[in-house]
Image 1 (spheres, rainbow, N blue to C red):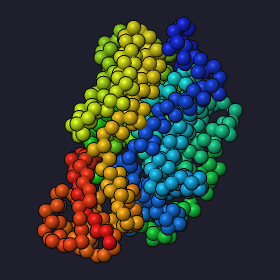
Image 2: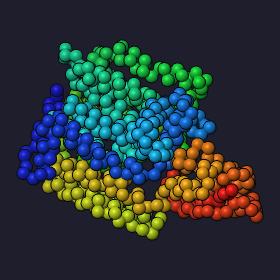
Image 3: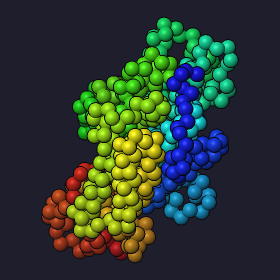
Image 4: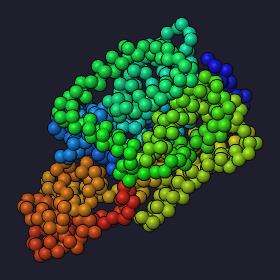
Length: 569
């Protein structure tokens, strides 16, 4: 273990805030229990109430739902379209969660988005606990607990824990492999073999990661392995991971599905996933998600809040100590991947989430080295971002609620204002030269902000829930199982809530023809196509207006209005 890896316990203080890390870290079992409690407070609120978030989440959930509908666990489809973008791992996990919910008698399980989010919730909890395990390679128990709490408290992980897609599970896989690789690096030159738990973590994380998101976990561990080997001019330390046996296990785990999808799709999966999706993101911005170089660095102060400001203050220390084994590993784990993501035109904030545990560990190493010093030039201004982010979020939510629905999210305000107060206390503690207390207060601020934002505030802004309100109109019709179509509004959340057979007529005339086709029918018409539909509808006797929804389309970033027309025999 290096000189920086051991860490040191801070001076005891009678104040409860100062004693919290020590009390929670008395034993490994207590530390894990504390982190699990932290995870549940951070990640559970909003799991049920938060609507399907367009567009990626309902695309994943709908494809998983269609696996249950068809019984085909190999091919991945969204309605009739092949979804050859990501491997099958997350779809299997989501389908298993929903099947378990059905077996337990959950009503309408296949359109209950919370069931599809269970793998992400478990993945986020696992990522938090695994970050503690990874941090133990660098820090003592107290320091590892603080680093894991700092990572768990970050806004990006809280968001991904509530979204039924790949990134929370991917992060857990990446952190498992990251922690094992760190142990192989820091123990190189010794004759003691790596524990079996480290080998299982490395290769298990790699195998599940490949099934969940293809090459991403190999990228996250491959880049530091290459960089460190080049630094040392020695590759032999990697033999501690037993690559021959490990690669064979990974191949056995992932090959069956990849061979099955290659046969079933005639090779189309690989041409779409690699040639179109992955290389397309490298060559240009996909789906309007373009960002300039440096975009991740700017967004980092929000996505890794509340730890980002303290992490930024630790970076000069990291550069000075780059020859230290522990710091060199953390730099190698972050810098090459970060530069690649900054260079790629497609920018999405969750892409860098698996790198954030390394930032958290580096921050606590900096804390133990005494570099979180308010006397440094500009340190107080950087640390002020700890309170600026929750204050900005609170003001933004109040403004959005008033502008969209002429209402203020009163139920969320006590938690949001409490988070702002604790964040201000964190800043004050930092300025008073109590950096560990500042970190603890920042984590406590997140314990209020995440439930207030995701659990309460979104409930009080109904304008954001366009698809659930449209589905409620369908459910209120007097006839069972109506045929439903949507003219203009084509968000995946509506497909997920209404059903796989949701029709999307291409024109107002096609929408009018849909209503005339007989039986119980419902058509949603977006305002921008209302005149076209009215002209095609004419004085057709069958349909009647049965509802109206006005709201805000989060994905499109615009106000939207739809009128519902029904034919009820």
